[in-house]
Length: 375
Image 1 (tube, one colour):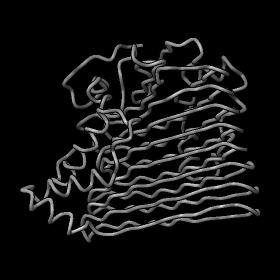
Image 2 (cartoon, rainbow, N blue to C red):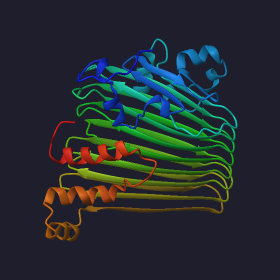
Image 3 (cartoon, one colour):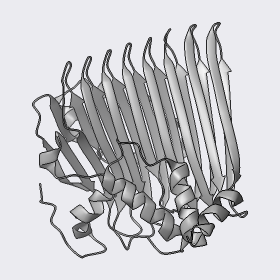
Image 4 (cartoon, helix red, strand yellow):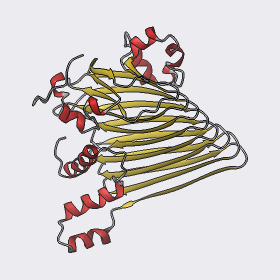
């Protein structure tokens, strides 16, 4: 594998340097249990520092571990979506990362996995499979980024995650795309019994169109929490669909979405479904409009198909609070800076799972998008 070295280049593989990767949560490999960096159609880094973590290209994993064949496309049918079908019909061999945390592993340092595009007008198709063994305890950081000067391209990704019984998983995911890109992501997860899974996703850079389709199946007595932070500057169209299926007795789920539109469009459809008795779930969808040309469509849905299911939701969408804005301006803060402070407070970036470099980058992106700068 090649070494990731600092460079000032804005396009091409050399642009996948530490400065770019840090903006989506990367840390030096010695501070991580395992590292994967996929650049364009190859790998810039692939290594595990922990004996209980196996990390390798998916194409190699299919040969080294025959049981991986049974996992691939087991949570999603590639024929179910025309874009997905076309993307993977054109792929000779799978491009993506296979991560396997063995049963009972106690991993102190997070493992990390990143996808980078550096060539303009490229089409990148990625398929990742993650297996968290029974009783394992692990954190992960993942992200997607493009070279600083890259504005046009297409990215299609599939992520299939399998969480074993009694496992504990925490993850953070950060996206940073080009302003004229089209991105389609398909995330599927199956969580076993007595497990916990907590995720934070951050998507604040502008892009032309983003379609995200996420579905999670929660097993008996397991608990899943998911917090998403979404920003849409002018010219950005985000279409997000999330389904959480409480499939085992005693399962619990909480889904919280914080969405800000500064002239862009966000459509967020969240469905909480119970197919068994004695489950609990909560949806919270909050949207903040910074200008009246923006659009936020928040559509929460509760689908109880069994007795004794406790499902609830809260949803609110509104313009920025003029009283808060006037108060900050009275303190001597100019209007743009005041708006940025309100947005940062609304997005709730204080979660300690979000790396400091990512929090700083989110704040920079929000400010830059408001100033119509090109990031």
